[in-house]
Amino acid sequence: MKKLFSNTIVILLLAVVFGIGLGYAVNDGLMKIILVIKQICGQVIFFMVPLIIIGFIAPSIAALKDNVSRLISFAFALAYTSSVGAALFAAAVSYKLIPLFDIQTNEEGLRALPEVLFKLEIPPVMSVMSALLLSVMLGLGVIWAKADGIAELLRQFQKMVLKLVERILIPILPVFIAANFCALTYEGSIGQLKIFLPVILIVIICHYIWLAFLYIAASLYSGKNGWLVLKHYLPAYLTALGTMSSAATLGVALECAGKSPVLDKEVRDFSVPLFANIHLCGSVLTETCFVCVVSQLLYGHLPPVGTLVLFIILLGIFAVGAPGVPGGTVLASLGIVISVLGFNEAGTALLIAIFALQDSFGTACNVTGDGALTLMVNTFKKKGGEAGDEELNRESNK
Image (cartoon, rainbow, N blue to C red; front, side):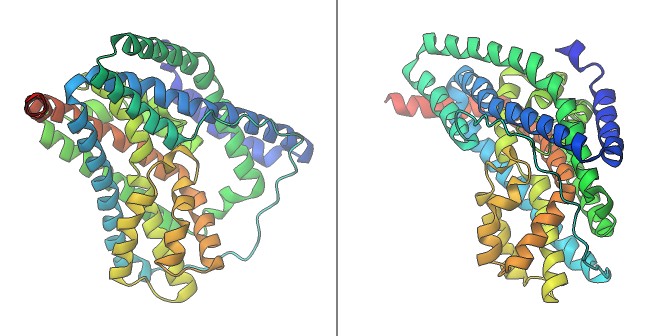
């Protein structure tokens, strides 16, 4: 796959530029065709997401043998801590800076997209969360039953998925990205960025600060230079900007992580797909900042500190699995947005609209942050995971 990825950055940038330019030039007839292409590519990509999750997580867990229980617990703890920490950081920034801005809403509606000529529905064989749980169950079952034959089947399935990613997913990603940006430009969403530009810029800067914090923390914990992981993640970052989905970016993220000399293959193949579905640092950081913006804008005040902290704690739980769907984080959290923060229909609609304008940047932060957490899991396995599980095994054999 290395040859396939050699020009990834250039191809993705060209896809974005081409999509934006095309969005300004197309008429309704051509836009209908582009929407069909976008819909079909999206259906294929998201059909493959559960296969990718099972194909990487299940055999990777099976290969970890006795280290699996502590590694999974450690990985979930890292993902939740990072997400909640990012949200608390965003809350602190919001309370300090948002009152300084005079943000006005845009009363003009977006240009309506033409009706799609036809839709080809290709539902995934299972949901993202079902695939994630099935992968964990299969991996644990193979370990506990010592089912070497099933472990070999899982390894063969992983090879099959790799080929599908290489020959199907990667080639259609630029088409999907170009079509997405074309649609955004056509309906006017690209132009609306200027409305909330100051806040969006603050959010993106916060993304970079949090990523720097994660990689510095990973470097300190591991004793290795986190830059040896981060420097390979630009193709994944750019892909996430276009797909707006951690799961859809998974194939590129695995390739990027695979180029790092400080990540072990068995840990990398386990951690990267897992974090793609449970690590939401960029998305929750963004949503926390934007709920503050909407609250100030519509209700005349920022949420009370205690209320926002409760919202953040619950957000880290409710949004697990949301990275598989563009905009999934905010959609998964609508229940607590309404019940905890007290947003009405206007507030939730505005939150979804603002979140959609920069969803790609939050997703890119999620994906890039996965590399730092993978480095921590890699180190945990080497430093403490093995010894701890050996003790657990001795206790269970008594």
